[in-house]
Image (cartoon, rainbow, N blue to C red; front, top):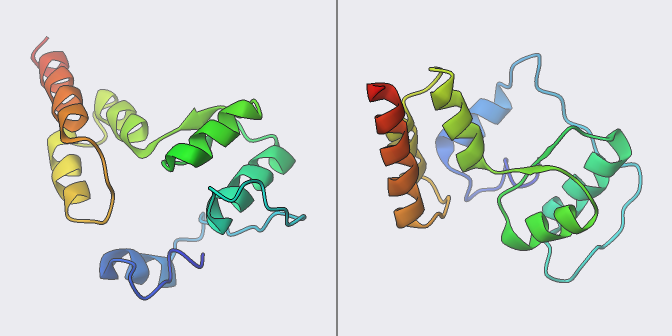
Length: 126
């Protein structure tokens, strides 16, 4: 929550979180531990909470966080995978989603974005 309400958080995200839908739940981990100096507090808490909840998957994009989660045996999903899966289910237009993502502080390799968009275009043609 601290990251979603930070002053540098994009205004659209900040507005959304202030008016979050009923299904959106905020839950803190019951134990606070520092996993690694390379991880931010949000990533560390997300990993601990995913372990506590025996989560089906952890949505995390931070490279060090993904490595630590995988090392702990947690299934990991990233934003790009979620968007690609949603596009496959015809829930989003992947090109539009990537364009919107580029307007945020999200960082991704442009070649990877192009590759995923090309694969999506090919899938839609078939």
